[in-house]
Amino acid sequence: MIELNRNDNSHINWNWARFEWMMEHPEFDKSAASSIGLWWSDGKVVGAAIYDMYFGEAFCASLPEYEALYPEILDYAYRELKDDTGLAVAINQENAAEIKAAELAGFERIDQKETIMELSLDGDFSSKLPEGLQLREMDQIADRDALEWLFWQGFDHGDDREAFERSLDHVPHVRRHFNKALSLCSAEPSGEPVSHCSLWFHPDTDYAYVEPVCTIPGYRGKGIAAALLSEAFSRAKALGAKKAYVISDLPFYEKLGFEKAQHYSFYRKEKREKHLTLTLWQALCLTRAQKTATGGTAMLKIGEFSKLSRVSVRMLRHYDEIGLLKPAEIDRFTDYRYYREDQLPIAGRIAALKDMGFSLADIVRILEVYDDREKLEPFFSAKREELEALSKDTA
Image 1 (cartoon, rainbow, N blue to C red):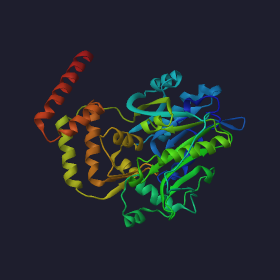
Image 2: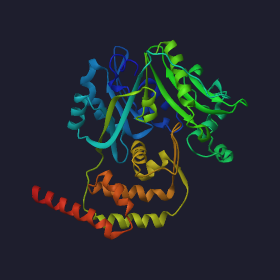
Image 3: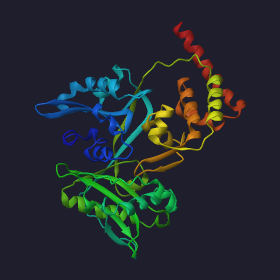
Image 4: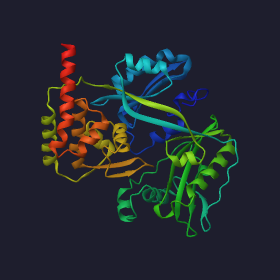
């Protein structure tokens, strides 16, 4: 991945740091690691197909001089890395060759995007923490519990220490290229950390990767995270980094000087053909029955929910972003996303509506009035007319 992005950053959404982070992520399905596809030439990897956490979403790429391999890599990914519903891959919007290969292979563009922002490290970075706060370096092993407690609060799980301790898996996650000097926090005089940021830098690259940044609620709006990032950027620059990347499109990063650099669209190939033999009302009534039958409040990790709902992990994250199906609890640092068992019927309802040809934007509106048949009727009428017109055109 270092070689892939050395002279061309069109695949920077998948860089070495993101891969290393994922490989030691508690939700990464290591049992399936043997399914990762690698293409070799003269003793080096020239192409790869890698699943993202779980089957159903994958990263596919080849070194520029081996771009002819891409259709083969994509075909392998679909055969070996799809889940029960199919496979989605992210492709740079400027990469016409990969888009064409995906479309020829039966992939279709879906309503899901990813943005990479870039910051030049040419300038000087000042970093002044508010009075009373101290700068600390945090070690992922020695300071593990303190870091996890900070993330718990910083990503809005609340301040219930007992609930936090019940959530711990008690397994230190070691990253080979972790640099303690780039893992910074601001702390109270007591030593209690209140904000954190980490950068990832490899000496064989010219960029730093930002992941994560968080501040606990009572300390937000004071410029603490910005000050920590400025210090981290200064340190990364001293190590040889010329720029920094972050997967985000938040205004917070724009205020720091980041600019949107790369844009990716997701292309998806379904495992099965869509069948429109089930009427809309049959589908909706079925999911109502499922809701009654399920009725539980058990909490499921995103991977468990993905397998039960047959919706890919990345698509669930996208549903969260657009407000379609939000997890009951979420930690954006560790990606611990928990869903209630009684949210499964909603996922089924969304799938049924997608099979009927509704866009995600339409489904958001439909679910808002789901229990009001009168308000639902215009959506159904329009879809029936659309299907009838399509039937006449293809008759």
